Image 1 (spheres, rainbow, N blue to C red):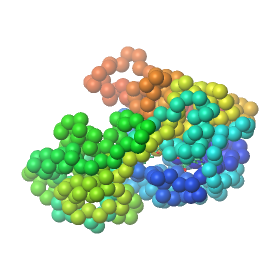
Image 2 (spheres, helix red, strand yellow):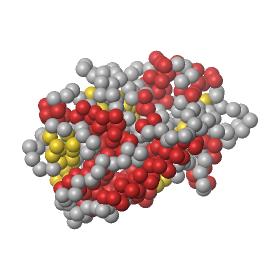
Image 3 (cartoon, rainbow, N blue to C red):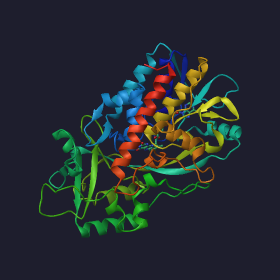
Image 4 (tube, helix red, strand yellow):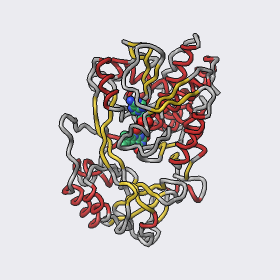
Length: 440
Ligand SMILES: Cc1cc2nc3c(=O)[nH]c(=O)nc-3n(C[C@H](O)[C@H](O)[C@H](O)COP(=O)(O)OP(=O)(O)OC[C@H]3O[C@@H](n4cnc5c(N)ncnc54)[C@H](O)[C@@H]3O)c2cc1C
């Protein structure tokens, strides 16, 4: 994500770029192709609401900066209520074609195993940075890399789902078109089925951590069995919440819990279970997930898994232009800087590409404005966050400076978010126009 966007932005600004990619020569456990911009798990870029949602605002800012990732996401969009979901194969293939055919970009296959002594570099090697490079980075930064775990949500073949039990509906029938309003596939549970499901989750065989790994989860991506361990009702108030949905087969019976699946490809042949990251062992996983009404005969295109995430202690290592303080010819971008998610990673790539290109062109840019979503994120990772407890961060309004004169608390939330997003758009537009180097 970040490397593709960084290369695109710098190339559009007239700088010659060499884009290195180790796949397919050297793989990772999660990537399956050699394409750029591969989405390794969910096919969602989350909310596309640029007035009330921070990630939607980040979409807006990236579109305003002619971002390649957003252009291709829009082009290969799938119906998903208020979310921006994409056809993952068409998305990454079109990114690959665009980058490979750009006159200012040369692509080079193979692993980069060290941090180079000279030149101008952006390292956007992601949460699954190759082991050799990870060690090399550790040596240069002198700081310990941190690690935490995400878990992959399972993907199911549509034709194995029992539609006499499941039904299609977006929560609160959200969406402009009929397709949007029926973007999710829902599986209902009564109380007895829910309790049995929780029991099975709690006793299922799970993957153990390897020696030296720290079992610290990022709260936004908790495995379902960990949520169940936190309390029997946690899932019913999280990914299994039954609100805003009416069972089409039994409209009078309110489901006790609902499991939602979202379309995973344009053909509509694959569905992923929303929010169902898991580290259950494969055998246990199929057994437990088939307890869900409608999924009794589910066949799985991909089972869930657990993975390591490599990221820097950016508040101590990076400056506000994403340069390694000790080696300023090297920038970092993407998830390795301690942001979390496809969108945030691509956003950091966009900034790194622009900042690096402008510096090379002899017209260094001002730091991105802190009131924009981009600026709020970069401010957080490059010094705003507490270094001692630094953990990967999704973009959220908590990173924004308060707007004077607005009410706090839940009541004033709508007005507050609108004020944040209005202010951000204006700050971002100003920054883009002041650069005079606008990519595009
Ligand atoms: C298993 C898994 C599931 C995830 N699920 C989600 C999700 O559902 N939603 C979400 O928003 N985010 C998810 N994430 C986070 C996701 O990885 C990031 O959001 C995003 O892909 C990171 O973008 P990036 O550009 O930083 O890294 P990547 O997109 O991973 O890109 C890094 C690239 O660098 C290459 N590379 C690595 N080391 C080297 C080297 N030494 N030399 C040359 N090339 C190298 C890799 O092959 C890769 O192509 C998940 C991450 C993982 C690992």
